Image (cartoon, rainbow, N blue to C red):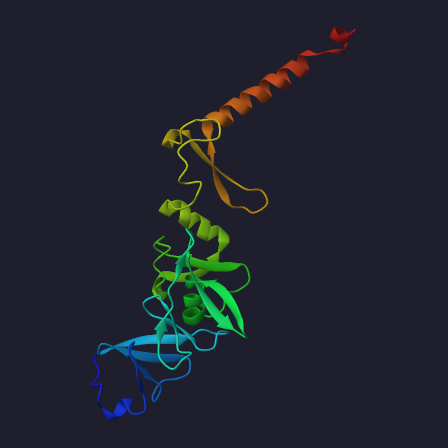
Length: 206
C-alpha cells in the first residue's frame, strides 16, 4: 500500500532515516511504518516497552524516537536479540517475540511452531502455538530434528526405510525412531536367556 508522504494524514509524525513512525491514526497495539513509501505493519511486544515486531519477522526499537532494527544473533538453533528492560539486558528468541506480538501469550504446555520448518522464517503467518509433541513431529517431517539427521544407530546399523521402527515414549508419549536390527538382536538375546533359564530344573541343580 502506498501513501503520500506529504499528506495531512501524516502530520506530526517523526521522519527518520529508518522510516516514518505513524502515531496519529493507529492504535497502541498496532502501529504502522512507512518505509520507502510502503506502508508496513508493526505491533508492540507485550512486556517490552519501546520494542515492536514487524510483519517481515524482525524486531525493532522505538526507544530513541526513530525505528532501529535489532541485529539478531544466530546461536545455531534460533535467532536471538537482546532487549533492555528495567535497566537489565534480556535475551529472547526472535520467533517467541514475534508470536507474542501477533498471536498473544502461549497457553500452558504450548510453544512456538515454525510451519515450514525454516527456523529463520519468523514471519507471523509462519508461526503458531502447539504442544511440544507436535513441534517434534514437525521437526521429524522437515528433517530438522537431531534424531532425523542421524544416518546410523549407536551400534552402527544404517537408518534405511526397512530398518526403522517407531515407538512412543511411555512417559511423554512422544514418538521416537528405533533401529529394527538392534531390536531384533535384543529380542533374540531375551529369548535365548529365557530358554536357558527354563532349561534349569531342580533336578539339574542337584
